[in-house]
Image 1 (cartoon, rainbow, N blue to C red):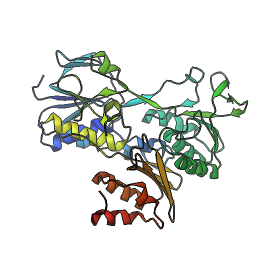
Image 2 (cartoon, helix red, strand yellow; image 1 turned 135 degrees about the horizontal axis):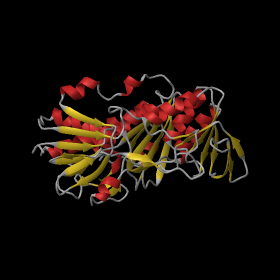
Image 3 (cartoon, one colour; image 1 turned 120 degrees about the vertical axis):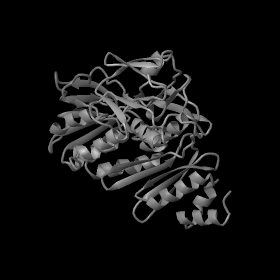
Image 4 (cartoon, one colour; image 1 turned 135 degrees about the vertical axis):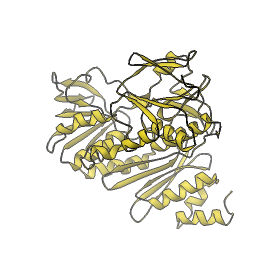
Length: 409
């Protein structure tokens, strides 16, 4: 084992960003990245959008060209699962071989929650977590087919949008009282629902599947209100769970994610975690963020800390979702909000979340100006109250002028 070697388990967005940052920061030791998939590190968000629609070739998904990893001396160990960690000997076992490390980063991500037994193993039921999933779905993704989407979260709705535009007949079943219930206010959810309905998508909210039809393939479902829906294929977007099994087996503290401090350090010496699998304290409350922004930024913060250049990671999260001709941009965390102020713009709308009369998040639908203003204010830590946003003739740019002139705290 090289005394300055670093191993990274997980070859997704966070693992790739961490490895690249180590080299950028001047680390000259060995870097080994372990990924269960055979594909090199790639972007996941386009899987349910551009790639599924056939607008992107596979190579456009790659985070870096193949020569980057060779030129940077970063060893990719792909297509094998890391079976075990030994923290005492600082080794890991992958494909029956042992690899040593001096420092370790866990970027194991998240995986789809198990499907209900009635859906598991069916030949026409698909999940969209990785490249192989989408490649398996694409041949069946044909105009005229009847698609049933389970789950009204971002993955399910983005898939529904691509399918509707491709000429499929689409229905969405969401067990919660509305789509995006966990992540968006009723006004944002209503706008997204109306958008899909305008494109012919049928959405069944507050409904559960109580019966299924078909043998090897699923041919239809029955909902708890007695409605029967025939289908040719099913996409399940029922949420994900952090991949913590490896860390837990090694004795690393986990609770809905691998627990880390503000520097990404786990409970084990010289072991860090970043990305979808990591749970840390943000704004005084536990948080586990599933976004490209967090995967990259937290991974880079971890890389810096591994090299003794650490800084506390306290991000202002941001996220986006493209559906039809609508771009939803979100900045901040809306958890615990007690008020929402909504505004229409020339081409879209925005929803401003408040907690104890302080701005905490903004949803912007085709309103890039509102998103940009909200992002700048939240990053600057300005205490924007409801009064500033509720005033007659509200114009987002006025908030930046108020900030520049010292009228915001």
